[in-house]
Length: 109
Length: 109
Image (cartoon, rainbow over all chains, first blue to last red):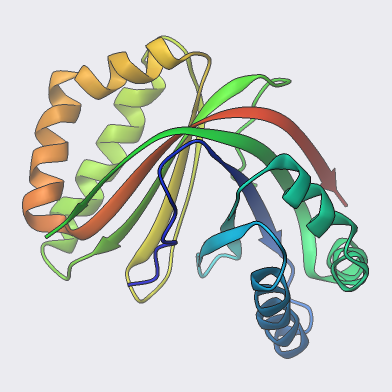
């Protein structure tokens, strides 16, 4: 089970939808793992969920306790380097959406 | 490119994170396609993005112009039937998060 163990709302979500290029799969995966490890140490980080199709279309949602926590992660220097590399080589396009989670419901069989 | 062509914020997102069982792949895919076709005809539907790992972990995000549009889709009778079937057979667990999208930024190379 790889769901983020988020608290009761409200909290915040960053939905990152991206189309991968076929460039540099190995370095991409190393960086993606490193970014999750770094994000996990940021103040206000609540969890992350991620899935990618074989076609290269992927969705990563990270969860945060405040907009300020999201802004701090955006400004993290290692993250900025990764973002630059992502724009240049790893993604042909992406869209980032910043959201306030207002409600959630869950089932687990 | 399979990104949802959403307007300027604010609008709403439903993040549906799920773990698929290995049951009934064919009927699942038919129903998933039908649900996207039906949702697309609902008032207030703005688009949908979806990705699933080989492991069965998937994220589907649908976008809507209001909470009322989300509620109407939740109450749609065909959608309710699909939700019941999903709980019973297709998903071992899921979490649905209702969010207000406050900002977005995009790149396209």
